[in-house]
Image (cartoon, one colour):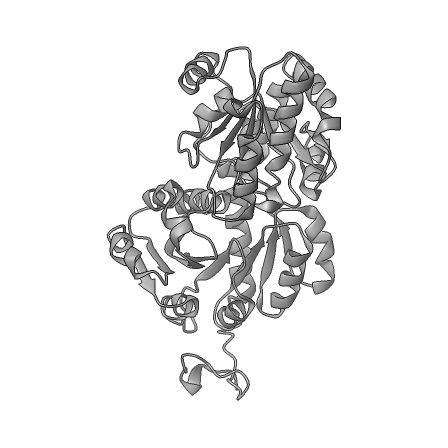
Length: 416
């Protein structure tokens, strides 16, 4: 079985980690990943991050990576890393998809983690079996899924709430949650925690809150700044805020830097950008904070739970999915007030480890959200999609004046 990944991100964060885990684990089922096609431009924000180089180094040999950039200064550098460049996103798709299949041949499946531009998806859907993995649980994702439903063979959703919203489309819908990455370990190491704390200048008895995601508005990183300030101001405890993740240039990072620089406790806020040795950061953390506006199913939360770190999250649909599995989380409303939440946070932390929640959460995540489990489920879905169309020939459609084919095909391959 052959697979091509189409994504609108490269070197950004969780989406890449999920894709790389699936590439590795699907290979054990005989699935060959031929190409990774990124419709997102590699600009200064991405090029300057260690995350991009981390992703590229994790791609197995033989997998072709194609992207585009408008900055010619990066082309030579990135070409040395093995990336093929085009001048625009549509060329990335149409010039680098596998050769059009013919009846009786092995048909590639095209997978998308974050759906690219709708018209691109429609074009791909004319020629290939297509599985769309809808990521974010918000209105735009649902609308996007509806727009491309005529050419999508199946939907994989990371939230059961989205599944119920798409039932009327009469297409197969599979619940396929994310998985934690192979870069984490199941339990916190107290000796490692002490060592890393000393390296970062954090006291042994301090409380460390961790924000491990992209610093963008919808992730609400400012919540953790206000929470840390409140605990330091109103209690005798020492609280630290540790920010880990890519920092795109924009309004949100500027606001967060300003808030921390103006704080009386500014020395207790640390910014580490991209970190490859995630297990070391999780060993330091006392609580993961991700009170975001919307999420699909964040990998950072799964990784924290697997490592025994409690999580403070907002009341998004994925939370009820995790609670259905028996996972315990501290949940607050979206855009909640940290000044009012902090007593609950401290109480939850005080009883988390001794209540047995730490071990139970880690065990549940290992059972249901491991790369092995999720890749096995994805492989089953892919087989079902291929079997469904095995005897139906190629779904080539005749071009029309309104929708001419970018690459004309022989009449013999078009539907009569």
